[in-house]
Amino acid sequence: MKDLEDIPALMAEIGKRAKAAAATLGFATAERKHAALIAAAEHVWDHRAAILEANEKDLAFGRDKGLSGAMMDRLALDEDRLRGIIDGLRSVAEQTDPVGEVIAEWDQPSGLHIQRVRTPLGVVGVVYESRPNVTADAGALCLKAGNAVILRGGSESFHSSTALHACLVQGLKDAGLPEEAIQLVPTRDRAAVSEMLTMTDTIDVIVPRGGKGLVGLVQREARVPVFAHLEGIVHIYIDAAADPEKVLKVVLNAKTRRTGICGSAECLLIHQDVAQTIGRDVIKALIDTGVEVRADRALSGIEGTVPASEDDWGREFLDMIIAARVVPDLDAAMAHIRTHGSNHTDCILTEDRGAARRFMTELDSAILMHNASTQFADGGEFGMGAEIGIATGKMHARGPVGATQLTSFKYLVTGEGTIRA
Image (cartoon, rainbow, N blue to C red; front, side):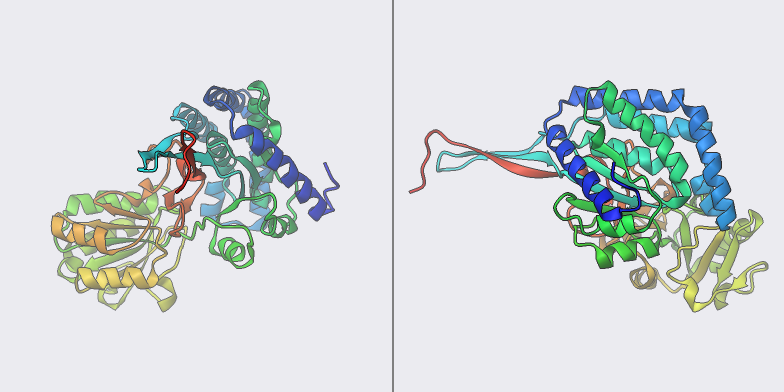
């Protein structure tokens, strides 16, 4: 490996190795990829003590940096979360291999038989912050889809990511696959990120997973194509026809289960007809659980709320804070979401099927939900085993990016000495 201080040379070598590995992975058998992921899962469990010890170093680093409670929660690992990582690796392993899947096929009058077939993207670069589980999720999904991957984790999760990466590499070795298929950038130097964004000869797509600052940097500076994972400015609209019991269950779960994930609710929109009934009850319940509710003028009379500022609309708090406002109707709710949302995940709570249909048809978020917690905005919960991120753009992949979304396709054209007239 090159000198860690010579970032361009270091990244050039990592890119070269990834490209070579991708050429092998493109036709690796489903059985070998399955074996690598199962072995990696076993190594995570066998080395759990070392991984948790590494995580303690990261938590100490995070405390010294003054990370918020929500960010520290993102960073923290324990045996239950390691079991979740292992379950994710095993789940991805057991999925149908997407590579080689015939998406469509047809015959032409010319005599040609044409197939559209899934094929790997090549080399994926993943830039992420804080959450060490992304190391395992991204490595597993890229491998399943036949892609080599270059992982650049956040400085906060450096030790945890390194320990998890070692388990993935050992899994590759056990299965006889190139260990360069999953590489972790071995430096906290931010110059490595800037270098990745210009590696057009060796990286086929960049996936940024983190806060607004990181994603904005990648989108501004990348010369490599990007699957954007924008911040989760998640709205829940409580309609006039909402069920009070469902509202309480869903809103409390959507806000408080884990505040530091991108599916956490950040803004509550309440129909004016239920603002002082269902709306008042759910706001009181949020306050009782320790949530700071930043309310507009119409809700300011509810004890315990604090006044919302204009900056609170369209803000990702990632904390025990939620903004709340009254809207006159469904159209106003959708207008607010179009203005302040991030096209990530939005939800309607209603028993009016027509209102739900309009909400889910007329809004263009990557994930739209009806009477369900936005905490389900997760590839694992969608049956993908894991996700590499929630893509909020419209090109190629959208919503949870699993193994299938990390493929492209090619056309296989067969003739019998067929020529064009």
